[in-house]
View 1: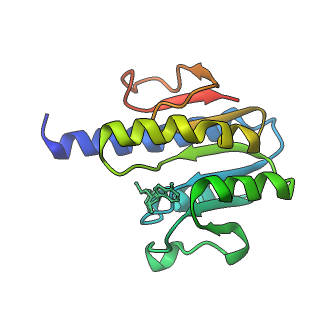
View 2: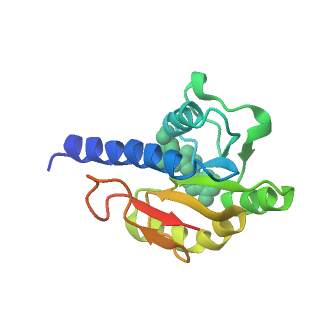
Length: 158
Ligand SMILES: C[S@@+](CC[C@H](N)C(=O)[O-])C[C@H]1O[C@@H](n2cnc3c(N)ncnc32)[C@H](O)[C@@H]1O
């Protein structure tokens, strides 16, 4: 498979997964969290799809497209674990989280996702949904939307 095809499949899985998760949390109270602002693509999608919810973003840098800069009060700039702890202490809780951290180095990305899982768990509401580009631990694994090949994107219930 060409790298273009592979990227298209990953982005399609990401978008379909986020749309699916937005429907799954319809009856839950809670905010939305994008872990990894990056260019701002998924943040932009989440704020459109979940327009009635507060959308938090965590990233160590603010380097997104100018149209996707989150409001300062919703952007937690810094390393993810302390930022998740800050969010947990603030009392806000998350119904839908999207985990999109990664260096592009498989072993490092897997290890970081495992290490980060307990901090993610602390901010989730019971039954909240996590859509993730990396395997996480300590959550109930879900099948996710139809049409996404196993392993391409991960889906969990807190
Ligand atoms: C793949 S990009 C996110 C792409 C983004 N979701 C989008 O759609 O444009 C990953 C981002 O996560 C951030 N990041 C990775 N590990 C992090 C960590 N441990 N703490 C804070 N930010 C981190 C990086 O700075 C980078 O901007």
